Length: 57
Image (tube, rainbow, N blue to C red):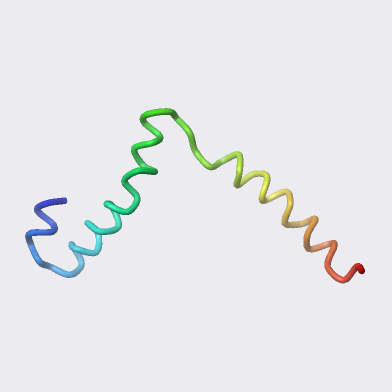
């Protein structure tokens, strides 16, 4: 990342910035094997229920 930042090329700096922003979440997987899969799964089940409930008082 330091080489990309030093290069001063806009695309490389953007990639470096994105990696830096996502660094904590990416490294969390290696530390505790946690993902947001459970949350995404429950959200996927709730969305159809919310769609069906629209229009009811």
